[in-house]
Image (tube, rainbow, N blue to C red):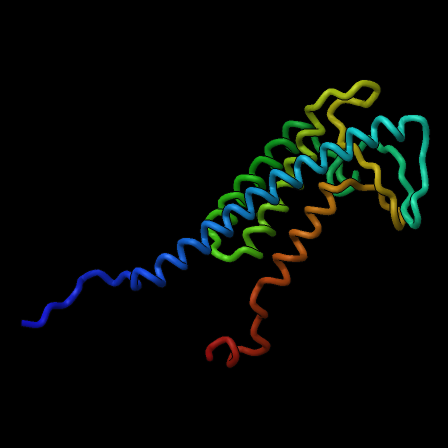
Length: 177
């Protein structure tokens, strides 16, 4: 008598490797997200304390304290409730996408996106002495822009996600093959 399996699951060894890889990707993403938010908040606290008396120069970087009430490096002004809503939506989407993703690089990219967004959102509600309320602490100044580590994490995430995307086909025939 020949028996057939109705279970189309992969063999137990390959299944364990896949599950272990996904667990490692998720653990890496959580570690990166928590570490990035903490690093961002610690550097902002130091910046508010040290740069309150004036700007400083470190190599090619100009360090100066800026209270950013807008988004996209202060270029767009929106009400705090809208910024909060958009940020929470982005964090929810990125966290969900990162959690569903099975590769470590893309999971880490989504974690950086969530961490950068959360880092700047925390600033808007964290009351710091001698710093305006509802403002993000920007302190790195380079090339005419002033930003913070959360912004660096956001840009890194976007570049990673663009780089991890498969290339678009050049022609219709490429897309069909």
